[in-house]
Structure formats: C-alpha cells, structure tokens
Amino acid sequence: IQNSLYSLWQYLHTKGNYGHIIIPLLGTGLARINKSRIDVAKEIIKSFSAAISQGKLCEKLTICISPDDYLKHQLDIDELNEYIQHICKFTNITTSSNGNGGNQLNT
Image (cartoon, rainbow, N blue to C red; front, top):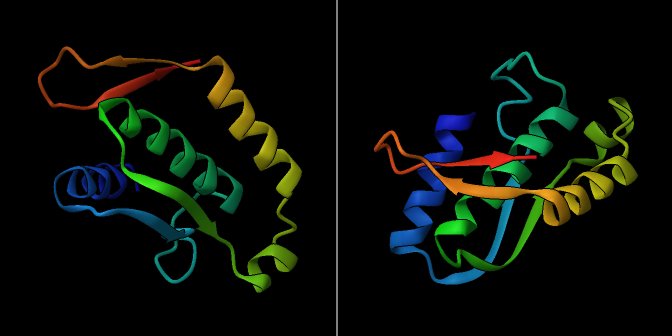
C-alpha cells in the first residue's frame, strides 16, 4: 500500500490537475491486505500529508468508505477525524536524505 500511495502522489505531482481526489480504502477487499480498514485509512492520510510537503496535489481529498465496510467493520469516523487533526497539528515533515525522493512524518 505504501508503494502504491507513493507512486500515486508522485504521479499527481507531475500530471495532476489539482482537482478533487477521491480514493477508496485500497487493498481492503479482495486484495486481502492484513491491515484493518482504519489502519489503511490512516496510512492514506499519513502518506498524503507527507506528499503535500513537496507541493500542492489537490483542492480536496476524500477517502471513500463503502457503507458495507462502515457497518460490517465498525469504522470509527470520529477516530479518523481525531487522527487527521493530530497529523495536521503535530506532524513535522522532513525530506528524506536517502535520495529516494520520499518524505518522512515525525509525530
């Protein structure tokens, strides 16, 4: 998931139109990723925060959660909101020194 998100953000930096990005919870269905849906949402949020340190990607980011996922997996939207607020308020974003062009979040 991390590699996919990194590639997505890099693509949007070079070819994006700064519009509204809508992203699903990647890999949580048939891909059988061994992470909870809340953890995948947090990874999207964290990687997006790191990516915007390189410049603007979009006007708005929406993470889509299917109604079935929301109900079946009892996703806590309030927890995600608190996580977003935490990332926005307390994250120090630094550019990686290993030459891969990535960024690191230090919370």
